[in-house]
Image (cartoon, rainbow over all chains, first blue to last red; front, side, top):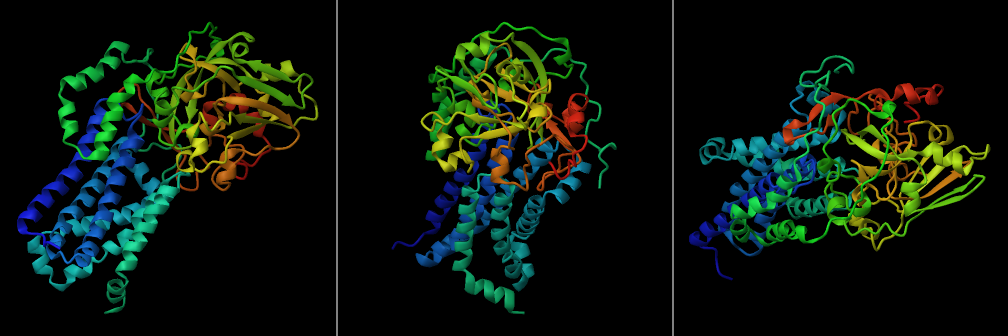
Length: 201
Length: 344
């Protein structure tokens, strides 16, 4: 099989940017043209949440694909896709706080306590934020071995994010169940690495 | 914890009901928005998007070809005791933000999937422990009773709310016409079961896992109260399918899911009937489902609600939820001896 060249990587990255940006443009067009329902708040929150979890699945797919097809260069797309997970998660939370809670901060605290699925989502978001903050090359160099150890927390996020989805829905559990299954498969594929990470002090 | 009655920053405790008229977008502007989109050259933008997104965009431009469900104007009175000063939710929000899982689980699905729904012929049967079982056809629904308009608050269990001008007649009036037996303790309601017309009944993924047909119930005392309303219209016209055409129940002091849509059967019984959401998740949805800010849903608070606004995305308000959705004067007596924490 042909190896991915740096030039190919450049185009692949361009394609990934387009793939992750165009759904946001689509959302904006749908909302502005009044095609996202009479009250699109739930639509926007769900849509951006789905964007985050889809991007998460894509990041977790990259290294298995790179290994299977011996495409080392592919690993360089992980940072880009990972940052889209963070970007969608930010939009998701911003939509929840601004459009659903309507900036009732006092109520936010009560909501977090009363909605355990929000706690689970908030935990995923904290992990995503830490990974985004430490995603710069300079930080990575400075952190040395600790960097990989920190970024392995994505495995926990791969559990928490689909559970958050499953827990938040009223009754439509088929789709979130599929996401839980896919994430578990992707974690199973990494079971050796996860064992090492958890049990090696 | 934030106290229920206290002031919470950001929550408007005293909604300004001062505005009298709702601000419905004029129809000409509403229908012209597609032309505006086209003029902006969004077709070219669409062509640059990946496949699935493109399909969505085509849906968006294709949807105008499907004719909307035809509604007719109605004659009705406006009894003063059922006119409230709350600002009405605009019609296009009431008809485009619906939970009607028979047509899909997203809020916009019913509007998109229900326009071809056939309501003629229709049969609404009133049966069970009654002196005279009745069958009403489509025409009877709008002619047999003097229709009236009632402006009711609607509080969804998902913590959003609307104010809706329904047109219809009182459930008690219909039950009196049929003559309720003194053995009766409950009334059971059932939605049409027609998987060919209701895709959610055919496809589990689309129908949200509810066991169809959708069923609901009331105690006989609740049913004979003045509030339960059989709506056949909305905003002066017959109901569109996404709002439960041709006839739906409206119970303003209970969470929205109790207000069953597209009803074909009303059965008076001497047993508590099963109810759909209770069957699906009994620890989350009880038989009574009265609006109650003190009893939270296991997964979220019911203390406040997002009142859907009259304009854009930011016109919504967070308001405190009222006990019995503000209808305590009419219904609180029904529950005098009931522990509402246990019978949620």
